[in-house]
Image 1 (cartoon, one colour):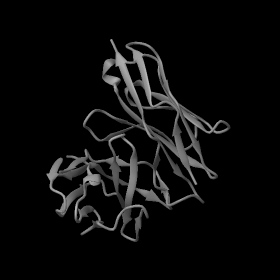
Image 2: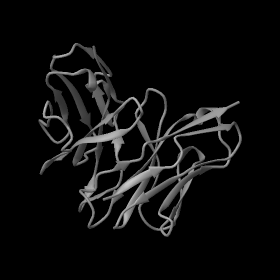
Image 3: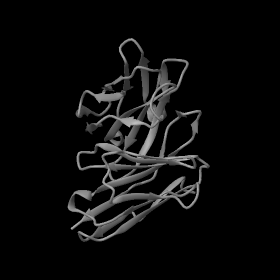
Length: 116
Length: 115
């Protein structure tokens, strides 16, 4: 069965500093990978996704993530964060052929707090 | 136009009541979902539904039932509400192609408070 582990529940960082939010997954089949962001009192918004092709994926708001199949990781990065990036970030996986019904399974989230 | 819309945004009700949350999507997606987000922000799938099958998470109490009048709507009906049902409920939709899921579009959520 597939699962997603977000290694940090909270990440505090100062404004304009770089940040990395870590995500590892387990699956016996090929996967699609996603990062979603949830701002306070809002729904989830897609940041970026990896379906196939280049392992470096660029998303909205200056975020990018790299798919590493050997390490089963999909870490999210941003070179310089802003106060407005303060939010909860969710990593998710969907199994490809041979997997489950293709529903997304979410990690427990990482709260990014950007301080001035 | 909102892609996935949920109503109401807030719902406060007493224990034992029956309530419904409505969800509509205008994306032409073939699959809709309900997720529950608890106080620790953990997202748990409750149902997935397309015009062919309803898949229920076996841990969801049978007091919860999805109702889909058509492909664009998936409502959530809850009977005999309990304090533990307090949470944020999210509707989502996606387009599956041959069983592959390319990602969800979420609604803005319904915050349910049972008192």
